[in-house]
Length: 257
Length: 272
Ligand SMILES: Nc1ncnc2c1ncn2[C@@H]1O[C@H](COP(=O)(O)OP(=O)(O)O)[C@@H](O)[C@H]1O
Ligand SMILES: [Mg+2]
Image 1 (tube, chains in turn orange, yellow):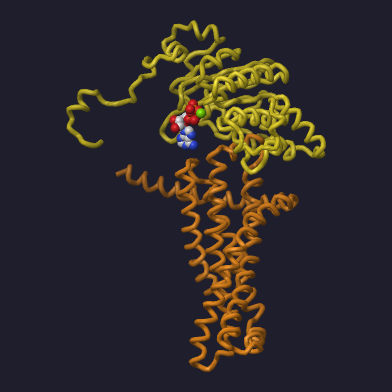
Image 2 (tube, rainbow over the protein chains, first blue to last red):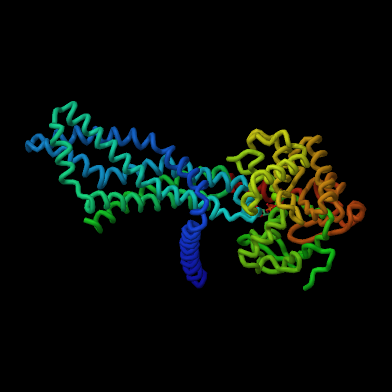
């Protein structure tokens, strides 16, 4: 009987201890930003491997998503004789939802999984312990620049996704299906609002940047230091990131609308 | 407790467990300054764990580890990082940073901890590489190195900041006879040239005994014997003699703990 109580108590304590540990690690990483700001080399290196290396997949996907929006939008809008509004529809869908969300999902698959595997392998091959023994704090030297670069990269990537998507919608809508060029652009210009639409999209992608990069970095840092442990953590990164992004998207949309 | 002049690391009554398994059950170790101390024991006895305890990466449940008269487990993080600059550690795998060249690996601690200009760093790195005989390998990546070379590079990196003590985790394991010989000679000569205090953790008896000044044998969480290599090889304690002479059965049993063979055979269980 007492064993049973003790067991519950122990699980509860373990849970809170683990949560506390996670929060603490996150705070330590964020605090370390103040130090790595003075080492732009480290951040630029990560911006390259996290951000620049994700650009191709983001641009190609954005282009296709934009083209699909053009097609589907045109087909629906034409029934109401509103095909002139195609530009607004494409732009709003991209800027408010698809840009931040799809970019974050692709980012988790491309950059997040790579981050987890990289950090996990560093752990498995004792490189992280090695850093500690060289009196170099891995939270500052490894985690912080990656998290920082991820947070900067995400909104930029989402912006690229949306921009390329708008262009894809233009190709299909205007060049292929014959929507008026002037209408496509001018309606978009008139009806996409900076505060309402652009800022909301940017807020979302910054939040997604923090969440997906943190999940990736955390999973790598805390993985079991074996090849199996690394591969499991990599999978977890993608799964948790996807769930977190979709869940948070609903929450943020509800809060900001 | 005051460290005497000759003792660099003084471990007293050290207890450490992982979950339910007790890894150290009250051990005392003195590591003399400027000497080579070997800590030996079968695999899984906690030799690597001991080095991590000395480096402050793990905290013992009980006991003290004095380095220069200061207790490592109770140190604040900042102080601990200062102290670690005086210790070098060679991990079993080398633990070289895989995303940079041999040169940058050795320059790494210098770049992180000093404000030295690049020209000076270059000279220092080349000196360390020359000492381990790998000046010509400076442009290689860690993945292009053999196991023995990786350990020599790791050695060069460990002494980059001119530490007082270097800890070697299984430096000889898995080496061919030639690189084994190179490493043995390197550890011995560096110990003398740099007046290093060296700690070697190993289960390669012959090589370790050949260069050690002092040997500790650990088994099942206890120190089962210590002394000079000669004293150890003549010891008539069954623990030490089994380990030193490599006997398959003895106080450390050949069989993993199990019920009696007869009961097992006749119990009729298919799977356990
Ligand atoms: N990170 C870890 N988590 C849990 N147990 C561990 C970990 N590292 C080592 N151990 C266990 O601690 C014991 C001692 O390990 P170790 O110090 O690596 O031994 P040695 O270096 O002497 O072979 C082993 O039984 C090992 O299974
Ligand atoms: Mg070991």
